[in-house]
Image (cartoon, rainbow, N blue to C red; front, side, top):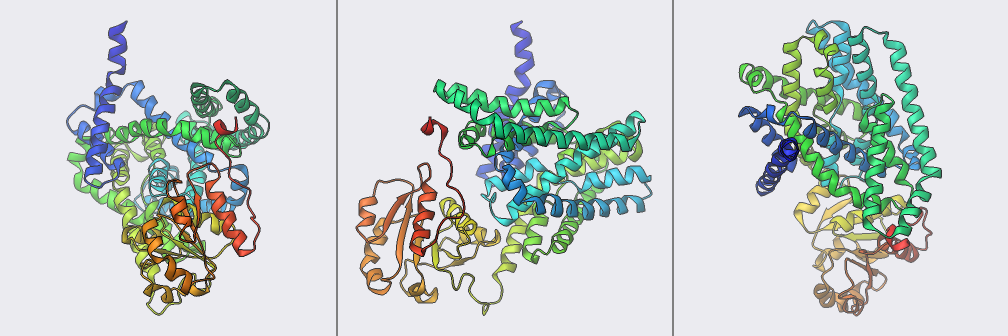
Length: 550
């Protein structure tokens, strides 16, 4: 018995250890860990070890990783936010699929493929990778910037479209009628969403209140895992994708005051299991096919990325996005999809396209996934350069009453909240790396050293009402305090700090010190800004950690 257990879990343990080494190596080379996982998988496949990791344990862990990723995405998409993002999800999402899927369908028809295979294959190629893109968006702290929000919305629509494609391929493989199968899948998806809304409204709070009374971290962890996995399982039983079910499970918890706790508990599992998914994608690269057709595959992979970016730019411009925004979003979504890998491997579609074409496309898509971090970064840099504009262009945020200093993690959170409250602000960052990333992500930011009083006139500090300082340096504030009091007497200074260690020292300079590392800390900063401007908040306060509430 013990020997069977060891033999069963051995592949997972081996991949876990090698995945850790790949992530460390990628970090040392300043590459995204996703690249490290994909290269590890491809290397193992090239060495002939892919068969050792094809068991159900690794496949299940990989699928669970994607489920946790989508569950986490659902936690940020409450029912109210889905209503707010409906234009992006169903408008922009459908537009992107029509442009990209229609474009690839036309290409496949021109190559002489049968109509059914060209249409399903074309729309499969129009899909982008939810796992890779959401991972990058989270890593770059872009969840709440326009590009990040649009990408997440489009991917939600693509997941729904992928379900329809899976149903279509299954019907073709079984020789059944396509129309009734698609209609039934659509009704199931609607029913699943309604159930998620009902669960969120009537069951979420009672369940977590019960768990809170136990006052045990194990119960919280078990509850988070149960909701994520059970939602995916229920969707799978209903004939829908596990990932859509996991997303709806997150939606069911998104409006709860226990959301932060659930997100905290699921985070470690998400990152751990998602590594198995990316390694599995690398293992799926057939070294023999790659060796025999390497020139063709590289050309197809490059062509896929270029055409996907072009189609996405067209969709962005058609949706009235700016050129820089369209380019950044296009490059971010400029890869194939894990769903496309699944679709192309199914007998129904592989039979229409041919085994050779399917194998080449699968390998090319896997390569496009590996290149995504570099491609998306190139789009981000290009968008940033285009957004800089001519030197005589009016300063973004020229009339803003608020100046926000430094756009690190805390600064971006405050910037996003100010935008939600419809408060105009001008962001300043003296760190070139942070500045370029924030500029590319669409923030109204300028590069300047605000600690240098000579820059105050250039940004018209005297006419501002509030200065919010993140990445606080109390020593600099103390040195500049007298000069600020003399030259900027009407400007309220708010220092947003992560700890309270030097609050007394900061307040001694005439500034207001507020800690953001507490439940509702960012709300305190926003409310103080609004009070100084004579405004009332338009959005409800953030929720506290359930352990604090309980």
